[in-house]
Image (tube, rainbow, N blue to C red; front, side, top):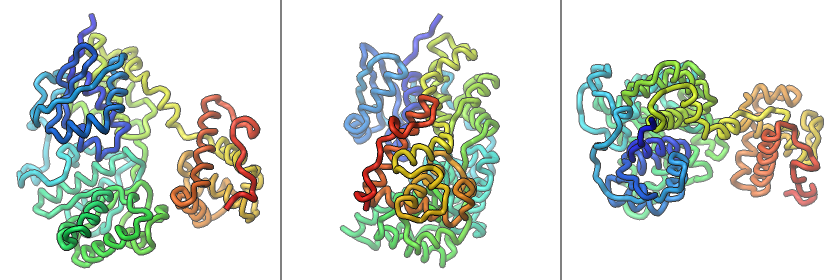
Length: 477
């Protein structure tokens, strides 16, 4: 017999879906502390901790919340919001209840309670970060930075969104704070906003905040690309902190050498220390992450059920967590049995997303670029340096790196054995032009649409049908 799903269960599943599509900073600020309060007559009431959150969600996220709730319930739902305060959720199902703190082994230095670390997510600590082959260097370097060893300064952690950069930054802050060190965490966006506010009022206060830290944690530094004043201010803060032996930790979506919108001064400083990457988790790491999540939720899914979830194509940890939330919320609706059939049905909503997440074949990318630019594949791989061929070649290199996920060395071999610096130069050129030259952004969008169409059709794109031809060469800038 099917068990009725309560509001708490439905909202947990909806949060799992929202966590995949909403920026981490927005999710943590506006959604993480919300609860499902009631669901009746097509109205779903969401509890918020204060009026500010209630107002922001109702005006800024209504559409996304409606979509997530409809996906979980299978019918249109109208969200409503009410302030319930920062209180535990009274009707949370046992399946999602957190474990008692005593069941988790905590390092000795973390047992001390120096008070709540300012601006840090309490769930993002080292004890909840799962180390695997794909993130081991970054994880070990993060521990060293938190301990104040000074051997990895600055530490730059880079990788695609959803792989754990923000988690590691918060974990470093927690561990450093517990050791009595003054940790300051901010997103690069907040750093820029604080700087603008400082210009309007008191710049000294802004500088004291960021330059007095024992450890500065700056998240998503790629936000500063093209923002020269913000970068200049960060360079000055960097120099002062580094000279004083203070720790600097920066996260980014790419390694510093590939962030073409950064100044040479900032890029060179970020290259002084250690650069560690986070990669897509493999099966063993995904399974370990799911087991860790089970400890936090006190859920009782058997290992074969977790393996079934871990086998799904899942590019990021954030998406994996969304899969788990979906399964945990779905099972009570179908009697609670974690059978393979029920788990597959629960995750069926993600099937199209998983297909789209797989990198496209390299030949599909090259064919789509050729069709758009009118430069054939042989010319792309040849030695011609004419403007049209060079541009098309760089466009292909960029897409092969960003979308097909090939290494720089692999791309170099595809294009006649070109060296590392030549390939990176082409990639960086296109990365910069996406923000400075509308024609390049348009070409990328059209080629990506053609690649998506070709993949859906399981065929190579045809130049005269799949890809709109690019404008004549004489019209290009």
